[in-house]
Length: 332
Image (cartoon, rainbow, N blue to C red; front, side, top):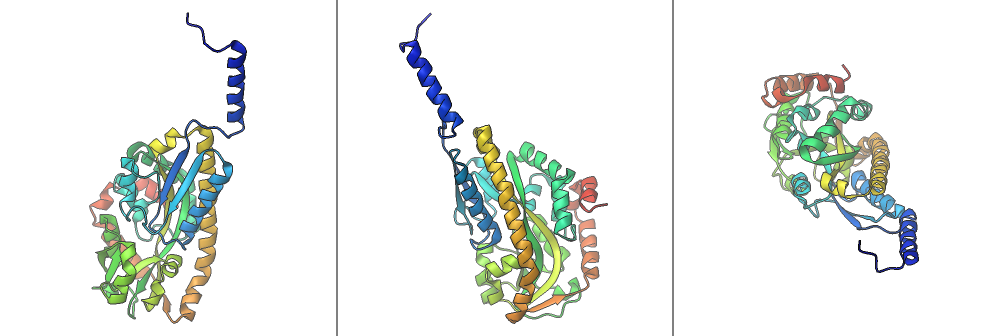
């Protein structure tokens, strides 16, 4: 048997030093850097919460550094999930449309008028529907969902004034939408002509008239300064939208249990900060937009709901949805 070249006492001392350092949380085999990308502008509540997340992780001092990249400054919108899966990015704010592109059973989460409000959405995401979603993304997409944030309730926002009482009044309106089949289907369900376009291009497109409108939560509308280049908001709340703090599973699995606990706890706390701030902002931003001169219309949504039922009922995309989970999400 080969003996160590080190005296036994010295070997024990070195082992004790190493153990003490690990217990103190100051020594790690490898430091971890998590690059966190989002399409949202830096001033939006989601990006602000991401900075808070980075601060919380740094304060824990467990060898993890988070770098935040808002406004698609690192990865272009729509390319974040492939970047996670290829190992080119560690974290992103993943939405339900990106999930359903690979797990079509959850496409119902993109349906117009699925949730009535934030409380219903949060209850679904915190319950069996959310648990099934997390399990599916981990298994099929190799992506872990760490927490659920509220992106807001999406409203229609038009460059010029329109008299709108139903979807027929929006026929021919070129509405900026993200480029995916289910986003475009959502646009169809609203009666508009959906126009695929990146978020970063939308302000200039509205300014020049390349598109007639966009749809986003009011807080994002305000943060992106779309109120400077539009005249009207129609309060449809057609999509009460969750967005997820998501991490590539290989990056997650490489962290120690302690690092994972710190990152997940920070993600949950930061997402709640976003949710609280966005809900408070939504309660006042409609009045603020009115004060600035925009016309804000609250209308009867019956015709919009009927249009959505017809469009989704005839769609091949909807045929793949998990109907049982959809009914649970709707509280039925």
